[in-house]
Length: 246
Ligand code: SAH
Image (tube, rainbow, N blue to C red; front, side, top):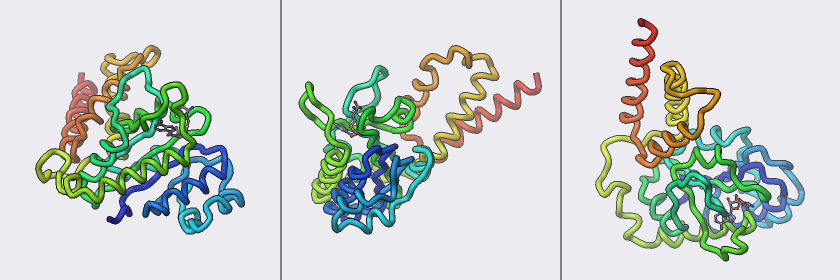
């Protein structure tokens, strides 16, 4: 099984050693695309030392400024989280995550995102993801080392890839007629949606509450394809035109 369409994204990692250990974890499982969002220190000797024979994963790692940038081309974005959030979001275990990822054709890119050592992923970062994956762990001490989390998630992808069942079952039970919208397209949709809602006085920018998070959750849960996302954009453009006329 090739995992070339799957990238591991590490957000704002503090300890360079963890980047090296994650690279090693990835390579042992057959993954090579590592994306680093604002790492504290990289490149680094410590990362190279801990990567051991996986120096090539570090050399090819892409460094970007934002999570949006890291996942813009991805049809599926999964965020790994050690704790549950105030606003419930679709949640899967690593095995279910692997099934979802492998149900997509390998022409579609997927990102598996892990967070900061101390504080994990922010609510805003988690809201970019279609679903969250939690590694079952001791409820009193549930936070794995970030490179260990990468190891477990990659391992589950390997295990699922050898199960025919996961490989042969498409995401919605049938071959879909359109490409899934990618994260970049969905982020543009959300930006547009928010702007229009402010323009029509549905969203108060001074008191936004959780409205946009709920819209995000609804849309991400539905996994819209490109045509569906364009229909929504088209409706918003028509609303914009109509209010400009009035
Ligand atoms: N204290 C942080 C945990 C940071 S651990 C928090 O409460 O969120 C660093 C990263 O490793 C997390 O952001 C997450 O991506 C991953 N991770 C650690 N333990 C995990 C678990 N049990 N399930 C899923 N991801 C986990």
